Length: 264
Image (cartoon, rainbow, N blue to C red; front, top):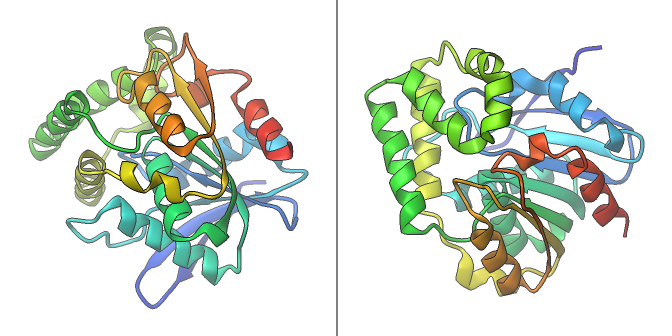
């Protein structure tokens, strides 16, 4: 049965989300990274990918708020998510944040420790270094030029390993076709927010249990980003040496590793 897309409204915004799994007291929140298309269109594939959690957790994935304001920060996105969790009366959840989602998870852990029992930070950073700023500047240039084909190629080739991208190239490009003006504007706002992100000096405020997972071939946020974040938090770190940024999609044991951490 297809996953139903739901919508919640607060005094400040409207946000879409979907859920699957058991009606358990244990809530698992997936916070995805930046994308050209809304993750709501991939609800069925996400539920299939994370099906090992369905028996013991109620799994939620939230979209970015509708009508995203300009000059929005990662901290603002975290506040939106906190209000969404509050509206659903979710506390002490288990959280996976990947890429930009990992940045949101860090902000959430700092500002609202009551919302996170355990957190996995995947392929992410606590602050952005000059080489990564250059890449996001390049993506923003392509987006401003409305060069969707080259934007999709540049983004995808950095995210996936060459082997994976070569195998699934047509499907990846097809999933990102027909980007409309609102989607392109949203991508630019999010890319700018990532480029300006820095929460490094606040990481010692995090009280939740944290596992950082990085990738040795990550071309966006290299393993050194993961090492830096784990060292500052004082938490466990695991590096997939032979995978790239999208190790969360490529490594066959990624979900099992998360499950093991949650159950420890």
